[in-house]
Image (cartoon, rainbow over all chains, first blue to last red):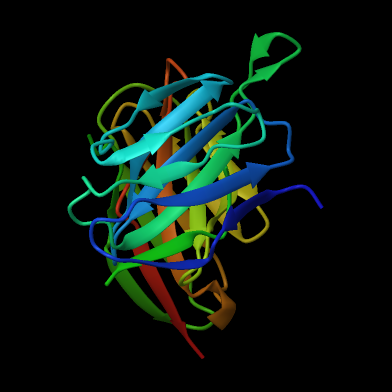
Amino acid sequence: DGGITQSPKYLFRKEGQNVTLSCEQNLNHDAMYWYRQDPGQGLRLIYYSQIVNDFQKGDIAEGYSVSREKKESFPLTVTSAQKNPTAFYLCASTQKFSSGRLYRGELFFGEGSRLTVL
Amino acid sequence: SQQGEEDPQALSIQEGENATMNCSYKTSINNLQWYRQNSGRGLVHLILIRSNEREKHSGRLRVTLDTSKKSSSLLITASRAADTASYFCATEDNYGQNFVFGPGTRLSVLP
């Protein structure tokens, strides 16, 4: 089945540790996104990438880092510099180009990763 | 920068009633989308309406878009207990750079 897979589903981190959240998609989508969701809140954009080897900061990039070495993969590292990392993290992807033209469609989301700092 | 704002924040209705949620945004958009999120899960796309469209239907869903007022509404007709979830609107800007989500409406449908 085509889709987006996030892992792990639950992750616990000690203060001072870096952790990496995995996001893999087999939808052949060009663009990938990382969002953070706090309880009862909407989604805030951390980073996004529209093409391999290129990514841009979103609204809350401080304390996070990403890489896009492969089209299918967009891992997010939560560094020790992120002061309040406990949250629900969502990865998403979308098709940006079709037949060489800009294509505008919906986001496909993974099931999320819940990170808790101990 | 938050663009979409849903209203109300929470809505509780009886099964069989209609549920209406509203979304306002601030800047020019290419399209507006509605998503659903069950507790602790990822978001699922419901419907997309483009800036040159005024109304769109999908099953029990009806979405309207008023670009002059920068607002949209989502109507769920004949609601079911399984419709209980949070609903978010998201806008994609004209540059196609990214999507901006509102804080969502928590819908509870009581059996």
